[in-house]
Image 1: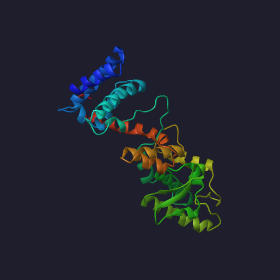
Image 2: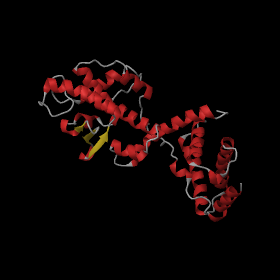
Image 3: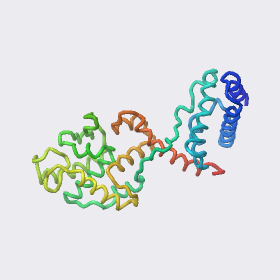
Image 4: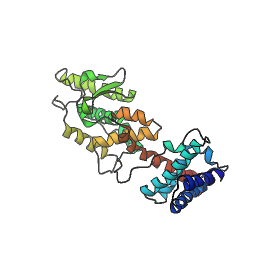
Length: 294
């Protein structure tokens, strides 16, 4: 391809890359072009979008390549598209929206959507104070992604059920508002009806024990472990797993990463990007189902 030849001449004669490096670049790009030609009938380098590049990354990972190797190949592709962009052959770099999971970083575990649906839709919770409270706790953890300390600290006046918004106090004493769906508003109303009947205004905290005292960490852990054990065999069953599940499911359904960052209360986007591995998992399934040679 003409564009590829121009790029290889550029890195060889202007950038003065070694012969070994140029050969490695050429090999990486030939692999991408072969993949693109198999995926797209009329393949053209300057018409590539980030979807195709992500699929290529997924296919490389499926072949068992290490994260380091995949990153190197993606770096080669980035260099090519920076060159094409500078030459005026493209108006944006399609590799900008493609990321590879960090090597050596433990990826967050999460509960599958169908398992959460089972837990919240079937009759696992009793209709007494404990059951209604526990369901509201699980629903709010999963429906807002808040941290344990944030949920424990919610006071009655932080909750705006009519507006479906709750105010929480996050890290570094930073307040944020988190929306929640109508279903959670109903769960909270059910719980509050019994809570207020039993304890009235004796405690300003939203979630209380069966003695009317502020709920505590160990009890919240027990609640989450108890109910998650009914639907999943995961070893880790903690409130933070529900936070991971919230972020993962939002991303898999197309939510913007910056929006997820704000909802989670992350200080920087880097902390949120760990969840992008799930989009790779989803795309891998699509690739395996759709590609004739998968």
